[in-house]
Image 1 (cartoon, rainbow, N blue to C red):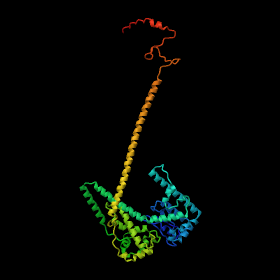
Image 2: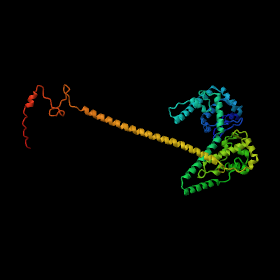
Image 3: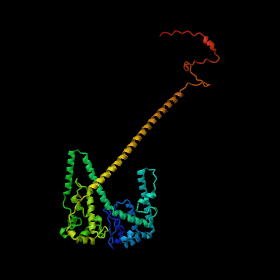
Image 4: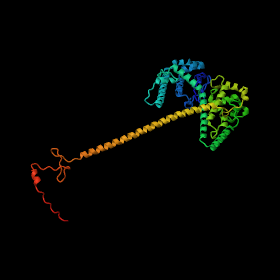
Length: 457
């Protein structure tokens, strides 16, 4: 939950800037009472969880830096929500200290660098690493800063940050409802697809099992209407351990104002519904879906805030709380319809959802087939290259063998002629040359020497 904590001496108006930034389930807001002095609190205990915004870190770091400037805080005390929404308060940024402006400039440069890295990673994944990137054009999609000036943090940047965060967080609950609807439709679609894979007998067994689990989930104790007297008294008795006959709304409020700021924020309100949710959902039960439990918690919180938060600042003051307890609906509340009694989606919505899934599956199949085809082509190219490599290696080996044969030759004479040792035959078909000055005719007419008898062994 997003939570800002000012140091001692800060008044509730300091929260007007950030009232706009909170709050969904994960984004609570604290508003500090006028002239209330808080004891110093260790920073480690004030770490604010992620708001869910993609620029959450940048938002929190900007707020932390602005918190250090006394002049900005003083002007914030006299501001109202309209001044903040209109951007009037953002102009006060021109009067903050040079050190604060320098820190804000550095934060913006870091954020622009981070966004550029995100853009590059996305483009690389979609188009490859060699794709050209127009960062200036693509940065336009990010509305929480002025992309035309990536180097310094100006009043316009603060105004854009406030307006964008306000809009995003106001739509956060609706986006969560839509995500839950998609989740439920996908769950039903997968169940139906699974049934198609079964034979008739097993399909009937599975459908009977599904109906049984559904009935088990619906068989739970009565759920009190969120924010009603019965619901709060149950918390008073079972959580606070107090006598229900002694129930007092003012005391109850102070008990559950856990940070003692004089307001119940959305986180503190949701904590009050835990007992009711435990009646419906048990994480150990197969029939209970914890995703549905969180959706139920969100529905309860939205309902109570709508009924009690009269000024729509997403905080419940003591006065607002006490006025709600004086209404007749507080005592005579209607039965609360749980999520399993609601129609999360219509048949038409489910049909459209399944058609979109079919289209997506077709696109994925086409891509998969294309990738397989490319893989086969690459494999063929690889095989061809391997064959060519083998042929080349064979040719090299043959050349090496021929070269070795050519190197093994008889010794040459002084004039380059080949010489052979006595007793060794010359080249085939070639007689040994006579010595110089020898008469070839005498040699031809000289009778052959008689053969000598070989001695007997």
